[in-house]
Structures are given as C-alpha cells and as structure tokens.
Length: 331
Image 1 (cartoon, one colour):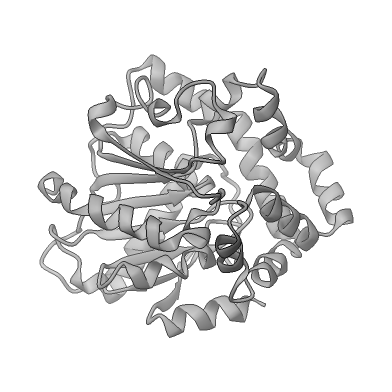
Image 2: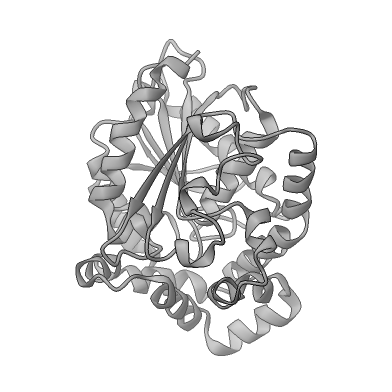
C-alpha cells in the first residue's frame, strides 16, 4: 500500500525523488530556502515511514520541506551502515541531491533544521553532535527539534526501572537480530508494526482516530510485511545498543554535545513514566550545552508517543513558535 503514501504527498504538493543510493524522499520549495527560511528535514521513527508527517506538513505553511523514508524503512533502500551518524549522512546526501536538482537560490547551501521523531530524532542528535558547529555537505544545522525521546545513553542507564524495561522491551529484543527477525517474520511484520503502534499510542480518542486515519496502519503494515524492512529496523536497534551507545559515551568524554537550539516536544503521559528525573531536564548537560538552549514543550491530555499524528496541530504550533528564534543562528 505504498501508493497511499505516494498519493498523499502528491496531494500535499510534494515532489518525490530517489537518491543515487535509493533513499526515497518527498520535498517542496527547496528553491525558496534562504537564511531566513531554512529547510526543515522531517525524520520519522519506528515502526513508521515519512507518512507520519502527513498532518504536520500542511500546517508548516510555505516552509521548505524535505521528508525522507530513512534507509531501510518505507520505500528506501537498506544500508550496510546502521549507526545514526552514517544514516544521517545518507539523508543529508539525499537532500543535497534533491537540492542540486531542484534548487535555484543564491545561498549555497541554505541552513537546515533537523526535526526528528523517535529514531529520526536519534539520527538528528547523533549527526549534529558528530559535526558540532561545522557544516555537513555544505548545509549548516541551525536547530534541532527532538520529539518524544530521551538520550540513548540515559535510556540504557535507567534499565533498573521496571516501567522503562517493560515500555522499552523492544530495545533489547530488536538488538538481538538473529532472534528478533525470524520471530517477527513468523508473527507477521505487519502484525508486529500495528501491535507496537497500538502499544505506544495514547488514550485520547481524537488522537487515536487521527493516528489511524488515512489508512495509516495499512501503510505501516505493508512496509513491515517486507523482510528487508524488518531486517533493517532490527539492525537499527542493534546499532543503538552498540556503536551508537559507544559514540554517545565517547562524545560526552570528549565534551561533544548539542550546541544548537533544541526544541524538545514530548508526551507528558508517555515519556515521563519512563524517566527517573523531571523529563524537561533530561536533555540538559552532559547531552547539551545546557537548559538555556532547550525549549521543552509537553503535550498532555492522553496524547501518546506519536505526536505528529495524535496531536499535529500542537506539534506544528510548537515548531512554528520556535523556528523564528533560529534566524539569528543562520550564517
């Protein structure tokens, strides 16, 4: 049912492009990007695809937008490098190809804002920390918006918390690829994806209706019925338990951290239950330069993990209020 995603993004005025390395992305208005109008790169999480952004995109008005299926997810080709920095570089490479093909602006290249949910937020975090204040393939990251995640290292450190263990059981399970993949295949990849979405969604009736509208579960199920997607997503979590964890530990040891303004939007009902400290401070030092950089925005009222689908208006409102503050950060 990948055609549902294709049709929806076409209706929203987005163009489709496939990079040389098989990353399928959708974009609009890249030729209008400038210092005052950065490109917004919307990165999805697990177990979903770019389709999660279908409600937020029209609310972001005329902003230049780039929305990929992450490597191995959705319609994008898998990669043999699953660490989040490598995934991020592949996404930026795809963005650069799309910009070069369709962009026509005096700014070469315009600034970008990485907006990630779940695994996409981990890609955004890791990529930014790895390059610091430098450009990446000509693009300058002027801000990060991380939706409903805590730092990976912190997540592993709270493993003695029963709520965290049960809520995030899939972290350890999926990281054991040789066991997880055949079990998910046997259970049915589509069944697994739907079960996980239902498990992490909230209790708000309107939010649940929005989440499932537009045949969303059919779209996500169809992608996870592919063994290649199951394999890639398991490798994603395997990297999260190994090379990504090592990289974040080394970054802290080397005083590398988030230095860009950070918007942290989270489910007040979902994420706080899985933390040992006030959730609004979870991205403070040593993971960033400090609270002065961070704008925490809780979303409550029974809204669960899938903020862009369960509460798109509130998610977009938080983004639109925060984005103007980044203008002075541009080159």
